[in-house]
Image 1 (cartoon, rainbow, N blue to C red):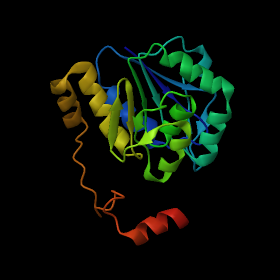
Image 2 (spheres, one colour):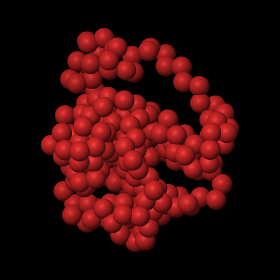
Image 3 (tube, rainbow, N blue to C red):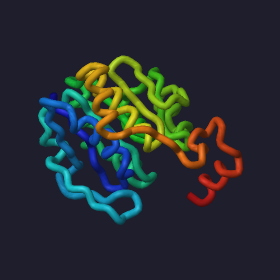
Image 4 (cartoon, rainbow, N blue to C red):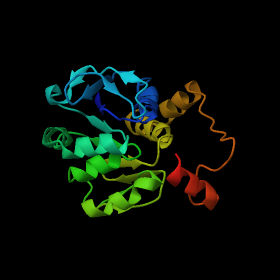
Length: 208
């Protein structure tokens, strides 16, 4: 089982790492972090550097392909890169699951893989799915055939556990959840855009 996770300049740190933490606990798996050139990348705030194992073009196949989200600049650079789009399309031809976290769904959509399909993404990115023919669901995780997309940042942890279940069964996935001690207790209860106060949404849009 070969799991390939894309890294790029501007990536949101928890997007790839949240999924990786659960998938790394599976037996008999190979996880390859790959960047466009094989060079280290910086997260969107420019303070954390991540070192991939391979250049994306050098990855011969993927059973599972994961595309994380990131800054607007990072997303634009990925979408504008014909090489990245080509390699995502190439690897997707062989995957059993092609997945994204947060705004990574915009990269999948730009590669033409979500056309006429339902998809999740961060609520701030939802309007950018439609131009690529994807249909925003507002769900934490959306599964359309082999295309698995999740909402913002922390939803990647849920996505990783769901993929574990698909690969190894419910019992193993449940044990991995226990090993991670994954018992979310958000201190403010404002993580859902559907129930969060409107002034907090305005604060996110204007300041954060």
